[in-house]
Image 1 (tube, rainbow, N blue to C red):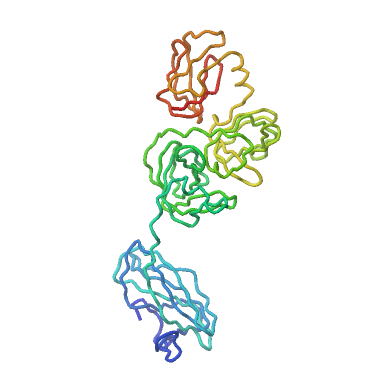
Image 2: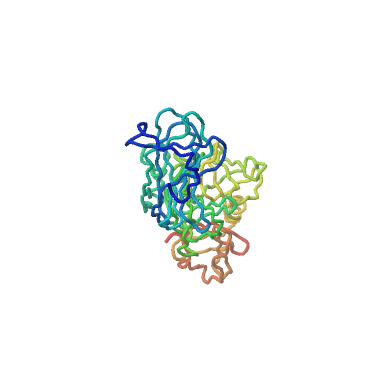
Length: 406
């Protein structure tokens, strides 16, 4: 018996000749409901380790395996109770995470009640180190790319470490999305519960377990938050997708754009159902931002792409993610021209009057932020300092879409 044992010696019996192995077992008697401890001799425990307690039991009773780790208030680590009701030996196992290093640890059995005639018999108790393997260092693309013919990540249930740029944040749900570069399988959802605020453009490293939601979206669940690497990183350029998609899975969690989405219906929660090319359905959600749209109007929509039954959905993040097509196209058609488009280091702008005289301009990114402004000479705007992406060029009340690629 260990120092934490509270059983009366009269309620303990050495069983001989009916052990699971060896010569002896122990029978615990507690016919009245209560909390009584039976513990082992002292063992060494190390903080930060996972330990597995295994034991064989038979008879009838309720027992809660526990691990005394000698913390500051003399407490112990508990696990779900084991309801023993068997005339033959049965094996049970429980796992514990040790919080304190001690030489005074003990394996505990917290007995709630036992029943006649056999009460509760225990034998072959083991304590084993059960640390999980270190997390796998993987890219988002490796985590997201299916290998078995399904839409599931091949690493479901595994602990992983990955990194990316924060592209969207849902503080209310303690979720954010990260993306590594561009292209298929480059984005993923992260769930973490520290409540700490992030900013889009933060570069983070996350450690967590890979899972799949009920809507078949891959998610990394972090128990210990995230590591902030840098802030203000360039946002990945939205992937311009031709709708409808033959396969949604490669673009799950990726920042994407769909053009010419006509609003067919605005729903009660602010989400809306859109139609592309007069036939293909696409939903626009309110996970991050509720866009103000009018039924019958057409919009270009940027957002995080994922599946929410019964249709594929884009989730805009900021006002600049939903722009009305009609207004932009009419103004563009009135004579404001920019070329080349996509542009690299320089874009040439021709005003509605056909001239290239000096003019004031603004470049607005996908978050609605003015990232560059000034006076353009000879109809030229320098773009070298801007990251790749989709921008709105605003000149003299006119607007045009401009894509920058380096």
